[in-house]
Length: 573
Image: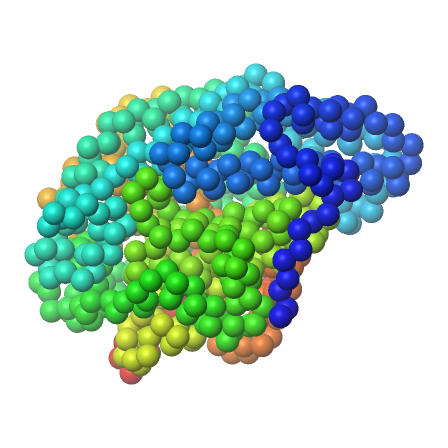
């Protein structure tokens, strides 16, 4: 077996030390702050001790988030998470700023291998530039209030034929319904979302005000510009995101609309409605790729092993040690994620499976993150493993496409497999306009912080229309459409972390294009790029994968037409 579970051994903190209260944690921060550093060797030793302390804290904080995600009704888990955010983080922040200052002011800094530490040091300098003591309590307040979104959605359910369904289960059920019933349930979900629209609007109003104040305190005119720097976006600028929006609108939206016209024709419809998008392009109900989460795990492992043995073994190991929580249930936070665990070395996958093709795709996506985390687990610096989202999502979205030819583990029938591939490639293209919609909307939200609720609704509708397929008829759904953005957790919890999905989707298409031409070479380049962690810049990592970090219309058109060609071969041949 290529993959092994080895817990990282500590050299600074006792192996049995656990993060509990500040009085137990403070001495380690204080010792690092006061320690004498008399040589470059001392400095490196100090850096690695600090990294270990950060790993111990990060591991504990992430487990607290996982436990709270798995059961939003667990009051003890909520209190534990809130203590970390509201009590420990504010006390650690001043120490971390002092330690950052100590590092950059060290006379031995210039003796460090600059090629090895360059990415790390620029992140440290950025943290110093952004640090404001008056923001500590505001940041803690934002983190706490942002969780209101997950709390609200975790309680949402709809009644259908005397069944109480989570929203994930309801969406899956629509895949198996006749058109009238599908429309009925779709509208019922929209009505349910409207019940909490006012509270979610209020939550966002609070977050907007807090975030704007954080930006002002740090010397920025708006939160958008602050967040770009806070996200360490050293390798591209705001204008690159605007170019991305324009390229998607001009090059991808027309392709998506053309495909929707094909869908409309194949389904024999006079009018294409959003609930028709639940089915496969030919109007058939999606074949159920698995019946239980156990089957999902087993078939995923087989598919991944066929692509590369190590990929499957990573997921298998996570299953063996209990690092998977996959079933959808009431009280569980919506969505899915992969959580790296720096001490355990093996990440945790959280999702809400409802036995649909979307769940299979999510599993491949999150396993891409997991493989990435496993490949870089032994890199020595925290910064090496603090992967920028543009690279992290490249790992995940590429895994979706690289495994495509091995989805036969889920579909024994060749026609069903073909339809599943068509479904996936449709989603690859349709993801790009939605990402552009959410990102452009956030640019507007935070550069116009004094906007009114009607202004917000009008601008959302205008931006949504710009990136939407005109072939899909939204008549009669205007009220729920006004608040459709509420579904996007990222806007509430991790603002501006979304355009990376679009950037990475383009990169994933480019790697898959190479894979179709030379599988082994593309696979080797993919693994090589992921193994770099964050020791190189984003463009350099993309280059290692054999692709470009490029958002020009020409490049986007090339990739879009490639996917369209692959789709047409599946549909018409």
